[in-house]
Amino acid sequence: MEDLEQTIQDAVIITRQLGFNYLWVDRFCILQDDDEDKKREFSRMATTYKNAVVTLVAGTAEAASEGFLNINPSKNEPFLPTRKFKVSINEGQTGAVYLADKSYQPAHPIDTRGWTLQEFMLSSRMLIFSDYQLLWQCKRRDLQSVTGDEDGLEYQQGIESLPWAAFEDTAGPSFGAHDADKLYLWKTILRQYTERDLTNPDDRLPAITGIIAELQNVWKDTAIYGHWVEWFVQLLAWQKPQDALAKERYLTRAPSWSWVSINGRIHFEETIEKEDARVEIMTAAKVTMFCRTVSEDTIDEDTRETMDQYFDLDEAAQRLETRGKACHYILLGTAKECDGFENAIALMVIEIRHGVYRRTGLAVVADTSIWMTTKHRIIELEAKQK
Image 1 (tube, helix red, strand yellow):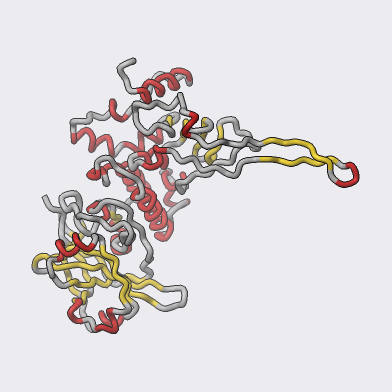
Image 2 (tube, rainbow, N blue to C red):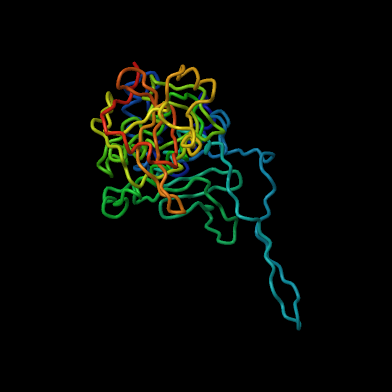
């Protein structure tokens, strides 16, 4: 046992003290040099976490060599526990004053890692070894100290917890019966997931496969490169924050239309209320759409001024990708603003060969009339490269 990394040793100690005979450790239970075994086990992660009696979370460990049972006090800011004392007030009465720290949101190193999001979202119970206290969280209890002391430190969870009902076999009628619920759920997952770090960027899809597999069972839908078939047009409206543009697109990892093809954060600013485009064929190898497109060459200067364009790549990478090719705008649909006006939501693409297009970004256009004179036609979105 001495040859194991300290975090594994600590996990073995806790497992024995809790009276359990078995401990599941990913690096030992998944063959790290076998791609087929990794693919198979990644798809089972939801089952692994859901069926575990408890998940041990090494919240404070920045590396497996550090362990989590011996915390370095110098890493922590001072904590003022709750104290109660008597004071004299008017007419000889006695009252009480409480001194307590404000609510506290733990900043666990583990919460910055991409792989651990599904651990948090899929585990039925978690025992979290935090900086100040041992914490407990399950699907019936919010994050709290294991002592259950109501006067103790109030903990806040930085991750937006997903309703456990979303992952139950009977969730269809009780949760996510409306597309809006499901879309919100998935967009929330992607926002939280893409803010995290991955040691190997090519794990961008594998590290969320467990969540996808569980939702596929519940929603009776299929996700292709992280996009649900049922809401494919809606989910094309992702965009990169302009302060975090990507430097490269990885087309051997995923097609350009998928958020998996680039690294870093993504978000959804717009929700399409009326879809104009529709999917004709959607497989892992081919996607075709029935839609209306306009070329930038046909758009006048006044209309250009009403357009907000959000490119996926930074300026240097964008120039290299487009190589002077004209931008085309695929009308996905419209979104209503607070003032009641409708904006067009358009996928920005370039034509890489006849009838085949590559995504370059997303555009929000105030003047929806530029598509009115164009007819719907079938176009193909570029597939993943081999």
